[in-house]
Image (cartoon, rainbow, N blue to C red; front, top):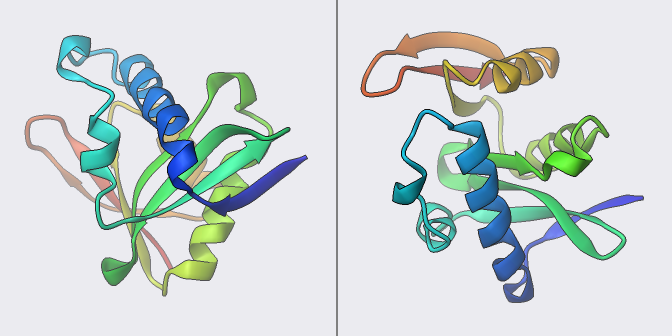
Length: 139
């Protein structure tokens, strides 16, 4: 059974590894040598992080920047994808954030775009800088 809870300091080593491994696989077009374990700490600073746990093991997380009702990160361990964990984490975000919620999703990340649209998110505007991304909104 999957449980959602707030991150603790004890979760950080697993979250750092999950974040690094997921980014290297998902963003295959970027140089993996530019991605590091410490990126998790920098990228989630001042954010509220919830973890998905299965049998006392962290299998995914979502990070929220509450002042802007913004979802910054959502990553699931590949071995646990397709089990509804992303849906559960988004439901936790709905409890914590006010509507409308916002996020950005890289245009190349078509599986994530499809997931968000299935969850009721709308593409608002495509921004074309370094790597193009979609600004998305949930009302």
